[in-house]
Image (cartoon, rainbow, N blue to C red):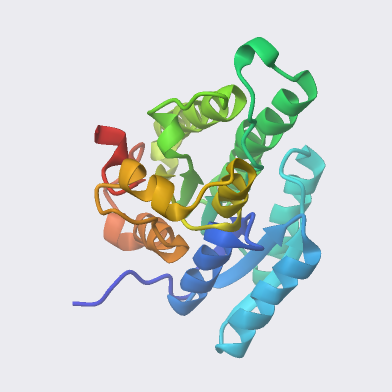
Length: 256
């Protein structure tokens, strides 16, 4: 029995310059996909492409801001121009959560989080689904939610709302596109050791030891590759009868 394969598949991963996105792009390439690495950080994105190519894989970098429809449209077009099609997408791009209570809501901060973390996923779905429908051969899309999609956190009103919305978008997209043989699912990570999480800890003057036990039944932070493994399974044919669902990769935190 073999593991998940994306042999000869073409995949887009957004927010792929670091953290979970980078881990996903690298793992998808290992699984045989030709990967389009997308990020607003060109240097970081190109470094991921270089790592994929050094390992013998095939990758392309395309800079895109997922909050801008024209950028996402061009991302999908560039993918098809280079590789001929689009089979898989992981919508991972996100910005750092807001950090103040709703009674002190900052409108600009709220709009930024919602633009990237929710509208960005909707725009990606819009153009990815349209391309897969045109191809007529199905496809698989994975949206990255969060433990905050199910368990609200204080002082993260915009982020919590956006990540709840990602699950809603996932369900609607699955309902609308089963007829096209396109599967749409989500992964909800918990406390994953990424630059975003480390930045949040630094801002609070806290450490992994301070929070790991409270955020994980396993007593540790997760690794980005552990989230990528869930996305790979959902993207692959091993999950051929799975759509409209969410896999929690959170060491049990959502169920505490």
